[in-house]
Image 1: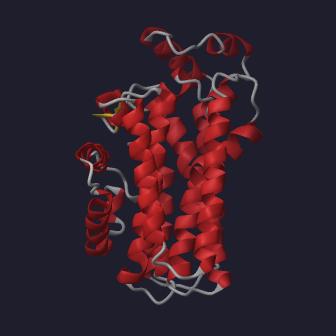
Image 2: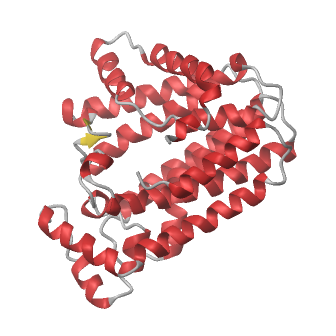
Length: 320
């Protein structure tokens, strides 16, 4: 079963957000418009808008009120992907050529900036200053996370704490903000929207750890990019950190550079799997999921709560 089946009752509202996304990124410049639509039509899980909608279900739900938040959060995510692909020199995203590969780095950077700017424009429709404070704080942390990831490329001496802080900024905080901002936009109490933030944070941490595992356990067809791509790009993820506790494996891994051939990466992936680091990483992902579910238990009971629980469990079982 696909995760989208868990929240299929939201399909009408999700379709409305898809329409808002397309309408929002239509630029006067033909090139900007084509590049933006190329990214949008490549697809995506749209998990951040879903979290916005579900967070809003704990308050006075109105799709007209929350659609701007849901669309804005997805646009921020999309903009970050465009910039990521430039930094990582990535040619594929979800099995499709990246904007920087189809055009060039300059077009990609301007497209990312344009999409990001449009997201901020949408947020002006939200009058609550708390929503703007939450979003601005999240964007600041997201940018710091991206800089840290760039700075730590091929840094094989980084520790677990640095990795966890990086994925918190890179992924978890935007998911946390999605849950919280949906609740804020629908007039939830402080107690509820703060609990939803914590839920989103824990789910986001689990989600990213699982993604980092799938980079080694998935196929190129499943990933939409070559397996082991994170390591090849110098991004040191949890399975790699655990695997490097074995000195012989660490010696092999620390020789990786951007021009390492596919055969060597495939051999290193096999070594990483044999160390047990995949299972250890998944166990840490499960710990974050348990924390998410514990927070969820303290929230009012409704259909959205049951859906969030199902999504969390689905993320925990994600193996393609």
